Length: 103
Image (cartoon, rainbow, N blue to C red; front, side):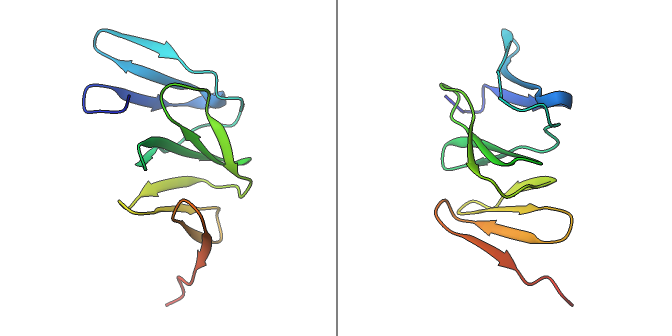
């Protein structure tokens, strides 16, 4: 159900809204942590909280996929990156890799 006609908005205390100009619905996320960034990946919407990395397919409740906490998430097409305040991770849908970001 994710296309260019529908949007998701994240916010404080686990707020996730899904809809368009015709209407919005509140999605029960199962978390009270703020949802500060959203990314599309593999046909789903992804977000991170202090509890970990979550996936929302637009039809069923969001599910916790990894228990690695994060502050923000970014979609790269064939993978996600997310940051926990110290480490940046790459997740390809199966494997999680810590990235060496030293300069």
